[in-house]
Image (cartoon, rainbow, N blue to C red):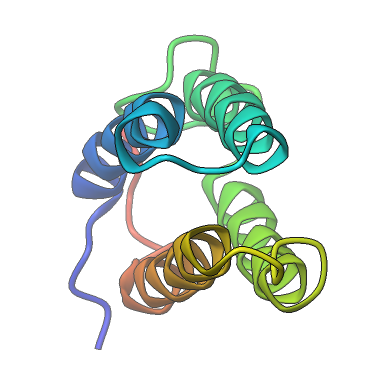
Length: 116
C-alpha cells in the first residue's frame, strides 16, 4: 500500500536532509561517519531541490528516478553499516537505521502519483 504522497515525501526529504546534517553532532558519530552523514545530507537536499514534485525548486529529476536513487542509497547504507561503519556501534546502528528508514519510505511512497 502506497500511503506517502509526493508532497509528503518532499517534506520527509527536507527533514531527512536536515537530520543527516545535524544528527552527527548530537549523537556522537565517529569523525568519518559524521562527515559522511553531513555530505549525504547536502546531496539529499540537492536531490530534493532538483526533483520534479511540489518540494522541488528546479525540477530536473523525475520523481521515480528520485525514488530509485533513494533505493540504491538504502542498500548502500546497509552495506556500509556492515563494513565501513561496523567498528563503532553508534555508527553501525545509525547507518543501519537510516538504511531501513529510507527503504521503508521508498516502499510506502506512491511514485506514480501526480507530482504537481
